[in-house]
Amino acid sequence: MSVAPETDEELRPTKYPQFRVATGGKGPPEPPDTGANWLGTYAVGTTFVCRSKTSRDPDFNLYHLVFKWDDEVVLLKWELPDGKILDYYVNPAKFSKKFEDPYVLGVVKIPKPEELEQQAEGEEDGNSNRPD
Image (cartoon, rainbow, N blue to C red):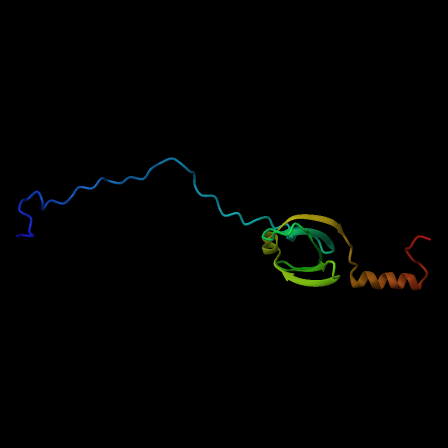
């Protein structure tokens, strides 16, 4: 019993079909959606509600934007019904990806220290800006 091929035809390499790239179909891939940075557009003093994209809880969370820098913000979150106030130091782009359906309730103007001093001086002089 011989293992070696007996004819030349058995020694020839097998011909494989030539592969080609199929043209057409989908266009070029779109860049990944980074999500809108809606939190980065809010001003200091903004009070808003939103909900988590991953949570099954349909309730909205109430937040207040206290401080804002280029890449970070500080948010206060009201925990109801306990009445706790928690502070969060977050990246607005990442926060915007994790939360959806933002709704602005209003913007509270937070006076700067200089404005508070001027207001206090005005009250001492009797020049109060309050209506009588």
